[in-house]
Amino acid sequence: MEKPVWQFSDDRGQRATAGRTPARVTAYIQAAATLWDNGVGVQAAFGSFHDGAEPDRAKAGGLPLDSIRYLGAGHALDLDTLLQGRPDLVVAVSYGGGQVYGLAPETAKHLEEHVPVVVIDVGHSRDLAGIRDRFTELARSLGGDHHEEGARLLDAARRRLRTVTAATRASASADTTGRPRVLALSPAGTDQVHVARPGAWPELRALAEHGVHLVEPPAGTGASWATLTWAEAAALPAEIILSDIRVNATPIEELRADAHWRSIEDRSQVLPWNPETPCSARAHARFFVLVADAVAATVVR
Image (cartoon, rainbow, N blue to C red; front, side, top):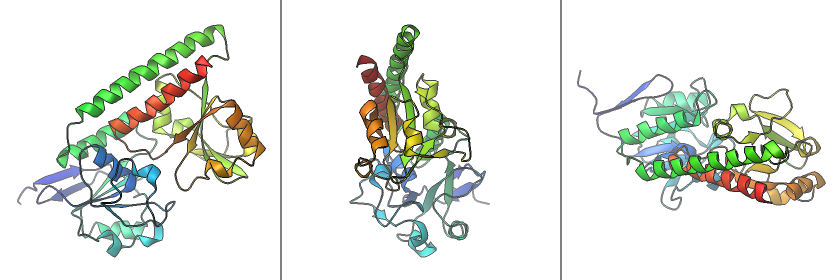
């Protein structure tokens, strides 16, 4: 049997093959943004069941949305839609168990009968560096660049974050209020909020590994999120808030009529957080610098 020109083993243990290196790539929008950061062009992107008819710009990263096709999301993603433009590779993500995120199981199953599909696991079973490395491997197999600039930016960002958090620990040794606490959340209307369990999120675990003090929500149901009232969330001590900016999260402007949210804003820095940030060195560098700057500003004031 003739050996395929291109092949890649994905995180389901399945090997995608092609007679030539794929050039017409369709991808889940987070994966598309990651590939773009890594020098791989994509022709089309699709969203998840949380998304709508227009692309979520928070997830899109640096994608040129005016020049790539957005195929839609959720139930709009049937087989014919995904095969528009005759892709020669589809790249998707999974949060464990090999299930393709954003596609109905039957759609994902039949898609692989027509085109190679690569699935990268971005869930809690892998650390942030491991997720980034898998996308780097895929990008290189597709002819992407070698990421020297991204790696340099990420190394600098990690050093800055470690330096800043080390300084806050030194301050906290003399003053227990000196070490800023970080709480990650996703607003879900004016009555409730989803508060992230840090251990379930690779990017939050990475912050902790670099010395950031993350706030744990109360124990209870929900592997990734604890769903609380705004009063309960406001009672959690935090000087820095990472607030979900995806389209499925309630915009901050709609929360400002609530006294509990106002109390959070009054005492905390509120930073934009995309829980589906591109899995690239450049994107992770920006995230680390954002948090490092907030930690440093909290200590100064």
